[in-house]
Amino acid sequence: MTDKTKQKWEINDEAYLEKGGLTMEFYPLIEKNALKESFALVKENMQTLYENSVLSWDEEEKWKEMSMDTLHYVCLYTIEHHKLIGFMSFEETIEADLPCLYLYELQITKDMRRKGCGSWLMKQLTRIAEQRRIPYLFLTVFGKNEQALQFYHRFHFSPHATSPQPKKFRSGKVVHPDYYIMYSRV
Ligand SMILES: CC(C)(COP(=O)(O)OP(=O)(O)OC[C@H]1O[C@@H](n2cnc3c(N)ncnc32)[C@H](O)[C@@H]1OP(=O)(O)O)[C@@H](O)C(=O)NCCC(=O)NCCS
Image (tube, protein in one colour):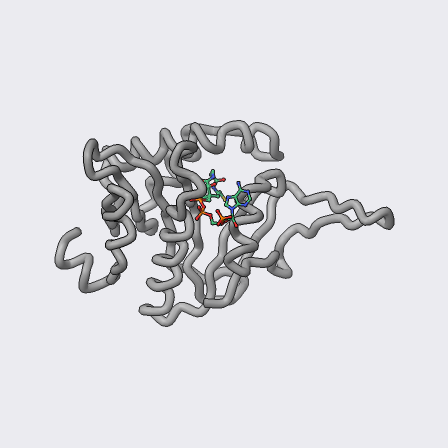
């Protein structure tokens, strides 16, 4: 992490990572190699979910989106081999008239899930929002992505009024929409 980065976005709490043999890099503007690795992880984790939604998996579009120069990345690597095991990308923006950090990606490799890495990244996102006095977090999640829905529920995200809503049948059955726009107050 450069000094310039530290001035703008302070990220602490690295002790948790070191205990797990991990280190983090903060990219105000993503570098080509880190972007390539992050893209490969998104493809591995998300391609099937995209293909099973109204959206299709369009590599060119996804690459373009992930390359946007408004996005900031926090990447987690193993200390030993500098292997990417997870990352998040986010943008400072306005959504539904609310100033927010919009989480574009939160991705952990399969073998590193349920060890607290996603929570660690989410805590850093909250901390950045607090430091910058940004009152809301927003994100989009597929209705079929049960594990992510459970995860975000744990962090008190709920569907925004502008989001497609679930259908609730009299039998009690709930059918999720294709995707939700979720938000939470920092
Ligand atoms: C969603 C994701 C980021 C969660 O990251 P993670 O590092 O595994 O999450 P954590 O270990 O911090 O889990 C925190 C809590 O979230 C909930 N949670 C996480 N994964 C869950 C799962 N598969 N099923 C149910 N609850 C889950 C649990 O409450 C968990 O706490 P616990 O392990 O003490 O029970 C990760 O599963 C992932 O990368 N999935 C694939 C990519 C993806 O779908 N990203 C989201 C796109 S919107």
